[in-house]
Image (cartoon, rainbow, N blue to C red; front, side, top):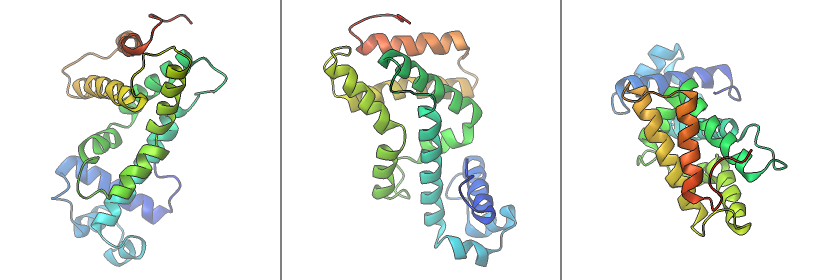
Length: 198
């Protein structure tokens, strides 16, 4: 998830993510990050100006990673339906494989620790922006109902997040078949052509 960073930054970001998920943000101090990462406090301050700086970098790194993951294998030459299905399947897979990153984004996207500029960059550069364009194309081609594409993306994201959270808390079963049914329900909620036709 943090491959684009050097080893020190990777250790700090990975450790911070684990501490925040295990202990919460307020209980995660710079000294604890230094102790658990094996990186001296002085070395941490060489790369990050504060705990808030680490949190914002962590947020941006996870959003970039998530954006790349959710949009992988989405080919513009594929049908809108196939791209739709690919993106939402990728999000479910992401939640399975990287539960801590998923939980961090869910818990802290609206935190005052996250700068507004970071949130704006995340929306445009993460996966929401590309999906909004896909939904807008579907509306323009009269494949989707006339509703704000951004709202439709967020509506579907909320449904998938609820499913993933329920599964991570052992409240809901999540098989490939159930995931496909949920994605199909999202498609049917906004598409003028119901059901999978591919």
